[in-house]
Image (cartoon, rainbow, N blue to C red; front, side, top):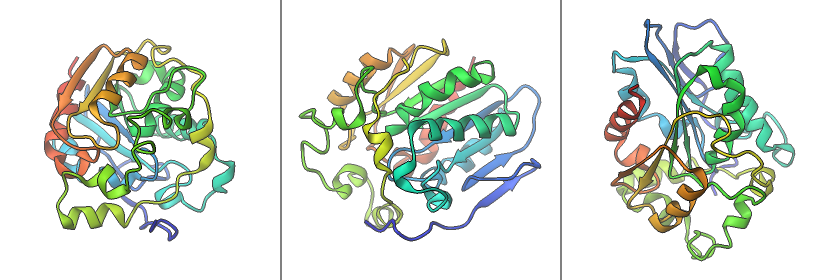
Length: 261
């Protein structure tokens, strides 16, 4: 895996005065607008959202867009020993970004393994949240971990899939190379930690986006996760696991529709 080298430097187009610890962030204050905080999944970084961010930013309804590099990923790959990282660290990263930037009306979006991060972070910033969006996320039942989910016959581990098949089935050769060259090792701790907070605990309205072409988490597997999340709505989107790369504008448009009160 070509993830041992440090990711590209922080890129920040922002009017905020806070220290930027993300790869991509835009903060242009508009009264009464929504903010998006985008959380990547395993082996990824904030870089995976870089094609979605400008489409969200272009909407006059959007106040801020922040794509977070969780500790141990992207620009923060070497910030902490990978073996010492836990799910609470990921939740801390999300809470810190939202509170430090004083974001309001936040739509918190999580992809893939971030299904475990959102329920941990949401109760701590409950009054700042408008909606949670689970984008083809893994959400084990309480008391089970991501590693436990990987024993499911539908999981990518059980099906012995490689990264190209899992992540790139609807990408062309150029986009496949772009994505695969940026993947990096996932810290082992969060994969082994059991889910301990219900996705419904914060009482925030939620949407689960089921990706119809997903090979990493196929639709039947996602439906099992939906039963665990119990979202307020389920929408389908015709793309693979890397929808942020294959259909970034359409995905941004979907997020904007989900964000409407």
